[in-house]
Amino acid sequence: MAGEAKQIGFFEKYLTLWVLACIVAGIGLGKIAPGLSEVLGQLNVFGINLPVAILVWLMIYPMMVQIDFASLRNVRRSPRPLALTVIVNWLIKPFSMAFFAWLFFDNIFSAFLDPGRAAEYMAGAILLGAAPCTAMVFVWSYLSDGDPAYTLVQVAVNDLIILLAFVPIVGLLLGVTNVSIPYGTLFASLVLFVVIPLLAGYLSHGQLIRRKGRPWFEQVFLPKLKPVSILALLTTLVLLFAFQGEKILNNSLDIVLIAVPLSIQTYVIFALVWIAGRRLSIPYRQYAPAAMIGASNFFELAVAVAIALFGLNSGAALATVVGVLIEVPIMLSLVWFANRFNPLRDPSKAAASSVAG
Image (cartoon, rainbow, N blue to C red):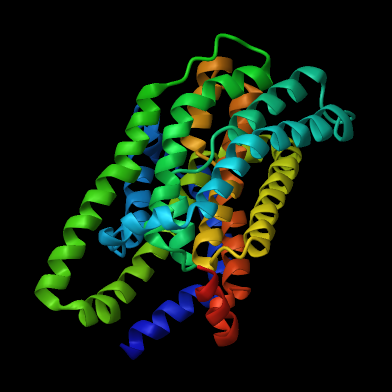
């Protein structure tokens, strides 16, 4: 156990350096072996890359296996975190993203972008803002000690709302009526990233506790999963940057310009939910995942819609791809922040948070 603790601590302590190394390695791999990244990049089902899907599954499963499904019926006793998630994701986030996109692409960066490119980048940003995260939030919640059962409910509600609200919001903000949502991508994502790991977590949770006991499950099995989750996360970074390395090198200035409003949006939404959660006396393990959901995006859906509406080589598609590239490093910085200011690490604050819950 001492060796395991040391290994986990080593990964977490130097995670920023590992992320930077993986970004550089990914871009280098895409440059040195473009054939390999091209082959891996073509392994898609309904617009979802299978190697990345497997890695995301490995990241999500450690969260799902922790869920005590008997606790799900207690969620109705804490409606405020769920209400906060819905309000921020659907009444604030899409419109704040549209505002930041307009502010930067149409105004602040107008000297660097022609109107056509600015409009396409703004469209891509809007698609990201209208698609709150479903899958990766399990990873961020897991790494920041969120409540796995409540995170599952928050994600499930978001998934249901996406089915109804995504098309009208995108149509409103883009000013178009022919938005074609790729339902194959949407449903395949839900099955791959929610249903399958959820079933696997449910079945293995019960079996492992019955066979090995709860102490072994919590003290031996779960700690072993954390390095697996982090390694899968780092490998995902390598693949994502390998797939898009050529675009990054050929459009470096535009990548930076696109990244600015997307990054500001991410930090603003996170801060909004974080502060609201604290002010409303919502328990940390519920408002932290809510902040992660609001900050991150369902990028598979956004990329697929951008390609369907504007084309593979469009500025809108590039903007959604930039959203993919910056999300993991930014979300890891937010995970660090959440862990650094987790009130449960202070016994006196932990007691207050417990009472508030």
